[in-house]
Amino acid sequence: MLFDKLLSDVSYNDILELSYEKIDESMILDYKQELNDASIIKQVTAFSNTKGGYLVYGIAETGKGGHPQSINGIDKDTNTERLEQIVLSNIVPRVSVQMKKIPIPDTDRIILVVQIPEGQNKPYYNNHDKKYYKRYNFSATPMDENEIEWLYQSRFFGMGKLDRYMEEAIFLSQNKIPHDIQLNNMEGHVIITPLKIDGQMFEPSPEFGNELTELHSNRTRNCSDYLSSPVTPSKFGIKWDDEHYLQNKDSVNKVEIHRNGLVHSMKRCGSSGPDASKELDDDSLACNILQTLRFTASFYSKINYMGKVKIMVKVFNCIDSFLTDGKTKSPEARKCDSEEISIERQWDSWKLEEDHVLIAKDIMDEVSNYYGLWNSRLFD
Image (cartoon, rainbow, N blue to C red; front, side, top):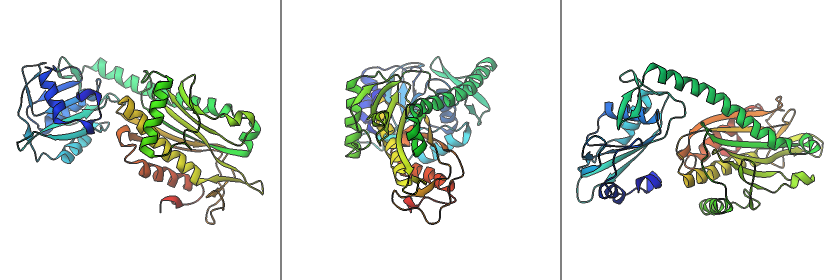
């Protein structure tokens, strides 16, 4: 059915099932016969301020809160790019949605399904009619002042909580590395996490970990260098961790998924060269970023998560290091004058796979800035 699959996989049969099974409107589902700009702005604002959900245009329901009565569709030439721009331009903070046009067989009409993630920067403001809306009693209802104030307080408290949680995850992993190895090497951390980390997104189990490993391997053909060890339980959820560094061996390779949806990869990306100078291997760091983006996309698709995510890249022990390709120093680069490299981005979770090269290039360009270069050599 519509609710248990990726939007890209939804077909007309799923729409028919809503009708056959008499699926009523709910907190996360609304049917609309007609489509207009004001309606979609209002409805997306309400869903974003509540639990997220689905707008299905082209269906007449039996009444308020009812189930599909007829599937009449809307104009097949509906411009979804224009609608997406209208949503982006009229809701503050910005909201990204997914849309899919589903043809109705033997007609020139379509069903338009709009999937809206639960907002992670609530409250969202409808700048078109100057109101805040929530989803209540099967409709978009204006919020009162107390509700708006509470959501603002939750937003700013949550942002600080997320930052502290990410820093703690990095600290706990970094702190396990023997001190002498930390002094002579450079570890790169890549974290991707939902902006809200209050709930549990999956139940850790060997079956879940093995299924995710297989899913990611099928998508990327070969992930053995990324997930280099069997999945095991951890304090936070599940992990793939070779733990060689605990025996002072020359390897750091850890990937961990937290129950709240945070993904953390820690891998070595630099070390002391033959002349005792520190060298950051930009190829290793970029590879970790690319692989973590794709792995996280696989994970989120498995748990059907959709929303904004925060991407953080940190590299420690960078002071006086040179930029290399793993073998030779970049002739144009300067020494890094910062103790650590820290870069953050926000992205839509469902675009991580599609945009993984774009994101990695953007981050690696900023890494190169630390070494006096405008751009990374890796994406020319």
